[in-house]
Structure formats: C-alpha cells, structure tokens
Image (cartoon, rainbow over the protein chains, first blue to last red):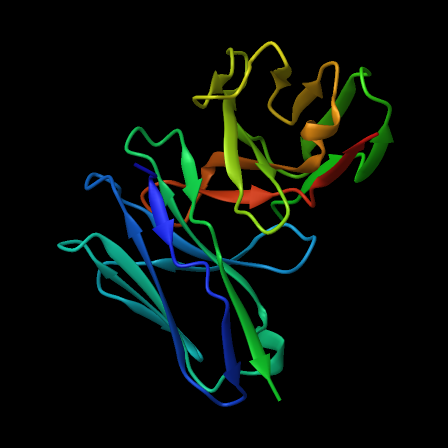
Length: 110
Length: 120
C-alpha cells in the first residue's frame, strides 16, 4: 500500500471557483503533513504545513483529519496563477522518509 | 536563507555512461538529504535518504549499485547514475533538511531546482 494516496485529477475550474483536494495517508503514526505546489518542470515549493487545528493562509485552507487519516486543501476564489500540480507530503513514521502523493493537477480557466 | 542548489541542471549523455549530480546546501548544514526521481506526469518518488557520514538508505526497488549516493559533508551530497540507460531518463530532485530549521515536529525540507537527465 502506498504511503500517500491522492486523486490525480485533473481539475479544471473557472476563475473564482472554490476547489478542494484530498489526500489519504496510510501510517497512523505520521505526525507532519504538508501541501506543496509544483509548476511544470520545476521543483516543488512548500505551500503550507498542515496542523491538527487546521490552518489558513489567505485563500488557502488546510485541514487534517487524523481519525480518517486524510488531509485536505481548499482553494477559494481561484486565480489563473493557481494552475499547477498540488502535492501532499507526509513524513514517514521513523522521521527519515518524506513521501509525496501523486499530485493533483489544477487548471484554472478564464 | 535555506537555499539548495543542484548541478548540473540539465544533462544529456550516451547510454552506458555514468552521470554525477551534485546537491549542495548553500547557507545551512544539511544533516539529511533526500533524492527523488520524477517521471513525466508522475509524482516524486523517494529514492534514498542519506545522512552525513553514513551509508544511504534506499527505498525498495531502487538499486543501490546503480544509484550511488555519497554524503561526504554537511553541505554536499552526490548521486551517481552508473551505466545510465534511456529508462533512467528522468527529473532528479534533491532536498535537504536540518535539525536547526524546524517548522513542525519534523525538520522542514528545502528542495533543489532539479536535474533533468536524458540518456540517448
């Protein structure tokens, strides 16, 4: 079983829409979770960490559900510049492995 | 701060040759470095984890004799793809973390810009 599972999409949404991505993880002992953004042919850039209480950064909101072992990312008022691949990531239980989901492709359409 | 560089950024080589990729942490000491491989339209797959001065820990399915990793100092790790073949063509990305830079329970990771390898 993969450490992290993610719906690859693609998601095609109009400007201004709200879109949500989910990601499930297999190891209940995992403690640290992140969302990254990756543009084509570039390295991933940290978007935000995911805290147990949920956290918000402008139009982006991240949530963690430990009981169901999933994390989510909500993007409100989508902009054209939000078009990218969004990857969730989880530290392995030993703290020595960092696993990515397959990534979800988002295209925001004018 | 917390910048990671990779060199080369782009390499084309003939089948059978070996290619070395360098990953450097420029302004911090990286206790751990990670190497990933990403095929087109796929996610980053962790290949191995290396701690300075120790042997790398390889993920299942990654041939340690083919992908040689050396982490000789706290600022440099190298990945050598030995006897490269066309199926090794991929985007190789390193990341580095430090016990001095933590934003969560675990250390934050900083990614290099990646190396695009094409084997003819």
